[in-house]
Image (tube, rainbow, N blue to C red; front, side):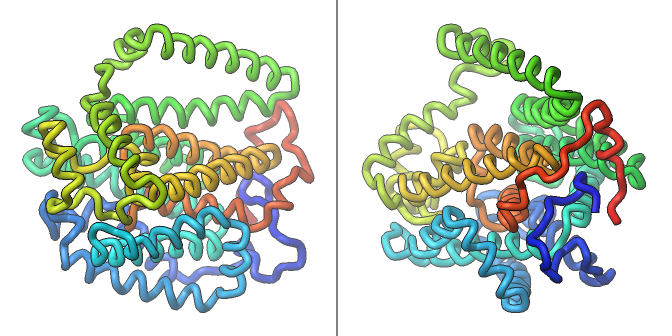
Length: 439
């Protein structure tokens, strides 16, 4: 199998996902589950925005998915056991979330949501074990393409439902509650479809269309962070193409990135107003820094284990009530993935998340030396880090963003020793490896 599509597995393994065949029923079920995780249909249809997290209908709809996950885990128990030993920080984070009801300010809620995040993450681990890179990327690409088409049709045919009319008037939100959700998903879709445009030669026209419509939707959402996400994703692909040209090109690019990064860092420290003005954002990031400052104080009250998974932001939460009183508006989340984990699971949970992220990035870097899926994994990690700064996307149950991160982390953890390069991509001929089809 070409290195462009896969990271080599343990030698002698007969369960290599690349050699498996999948029935149409199985792939259809996988597609349906990924659509559910996309968060773009069920919440808007079956719950109001203020009650989506606690909707009993949505909870019941997820039970078959969790039951199927348990069956799947039992079916592939040996492989699951082998891979979780290579993901110690992820498993530690999930155990902490599952046990947080013991010290939570709302034990029942933390217990219910703890089960949800564990099952969501275990679904990601199973999917990462079961399917090869080609199937995974194609299925994710099709899901994002469906979301993009649904968002476009909704915004054009039913603007009262798909376009914002109170705040950010005219910005597209599609099937989501607000524009930043749609923009973030489409930024990730743009990166994935652009990557598939280079990788997947038989479906190249489809992925070109997907990348184009994703970028257009990002522009229609008017989300600055999402636009940065698109630039970041495309930039990683472009940098990878340049790096594969040879060692001198790689050295020159490394030097250029170091100089550019130093200049941006200096501007951010000494002249942040210049950066914010270029981005069209106010220095408070639309009030987010006010939330973060208050959350740091709340975290200091319960620093080690937090307030319990998913319990801090409930309407009857006393600490959230006083935070909202200080802010003078009903902040629904931390608007920061790292702080969200810290407020829920304390610095212990935050440490697990940071260590798991760094381990995943390290494995992606090693994989990118010899495999283009390593480049894709780096892009996923980079976009995850970017959007985690302003959105609460980390450790979110029933979320395609978190599911994708877990899938990528699982694929990279399957055989860490095999990530070391055995056969380098030929310099000056990157596209031939990129577009080579899977066997």
